[in-house]
Image (tube, rainbow, N blue to C red; front, side):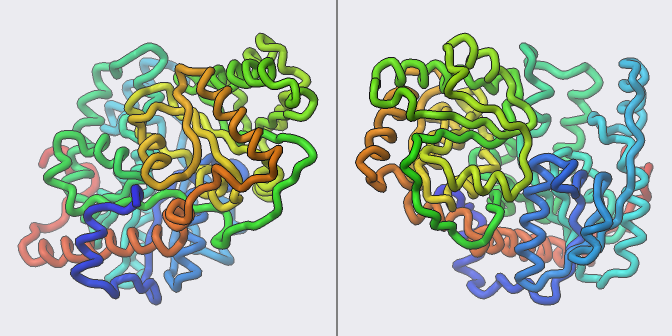
Length: 447
């Protein structure tokens, strides 16, 4: 399985019965904890916390964006953060002063204080789990682990520095940011008891040339779907419905290959005219309106904006083909957070990506679905034609294999996290006797 780490395989052979969450206390540090105002990071963390709670763990949350309505499920501590100044030079000074090259830098000091208050009332075997992005969550976790000596697991859901910081035609950071990112990357990778990533390719990208040193503590805790069970709604045959759920964030994240491929497919397939429709659901449509107009697809494409999760699930279940867009990079390490919901819907999936990307590797190894290169609208058109023909004949072709479904199951994801927690606890015990007194907040940069 593509989403199983080497570190997990080693733990599984050595200690088969490690995955027991009953009575475990976890302090989860997540910048956003609101599925209404928050984005994909909030949703991913909420889903993981729900599965952990169902498995018997007790979850405590430290967040900047949260709602008290979650109190019935988790103990949530909300520490609001002050926004950065609008002036560019003052923003730069604020980041330099805090030593954190992210807009969430002003959250860290208050969150550490609040985190110490939360941990003072929890058992001494509580686990700290920092969930980036943003990376400030892991910086807070680093401080709390140093101050308390508790075991700590650091999660990265994307590359760090983030892709967006190196985009818009740039391959560089502001001069003061690069050393700060490097400084904190080194600390987090070195000091975390265990590391978790959404997929092995992303782990390799974040670890870089330190991969060999940290491979034994790098685990894959990938995305979870909205439900633990597999949905089995029958396919509809009234119209060939192409669905994309999620945001399109330029640059490097474009709908052009799909729109141009759709135009080619419709021109080649007379039977598809009047039968095909495409729905885009998400708060950011990116460049889709532009390409819709350019390729004369106004009568095919519908953009519905952001929907509640229940309506997103209904839309996915109504699909004849589910579509995903990767970044237009040959080495993209991104794994789309919508994939578990796509896979559980039991519908054909097409992702526009490069063969050497993380998405390409997952689809190739686990048989998730079809891929087309982002530089080849013709490949997109051919994939559309193949799935449309199968849909017309009411065939079950192109569905994800069982191995792909299992990869996103609660059992597999929680097992990887349990292994990471086991390694983090061992690291704490190994250093507890010989460690020096913990550093105080604000003194770490002198070490």
